[in-house]
Image (cartoon, rainbow, N blue to C red):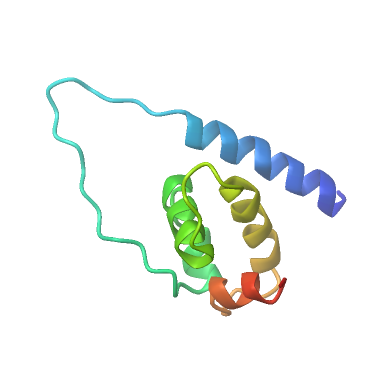
Length: 95
């Protein structure tokens, strides 16, 4: 499978996961701790999609609606080769 094909597949999955939410009336929402931009790639990979977007937004100082999903997919692909590297370093090398 080519990298482009894999990246496109990841993009479709991420878009589907981020776009789908479900709430149950009468239940309290779960609260979570703030997500740190200093995660390693292996820590980043186990986050839920919405937290991955938060991490990427914090790293690149982007606001919601910027190309966050693309950067999440790119970070996931790049992190496969460097699981112990901080996500921030992996992305900032692209500059």
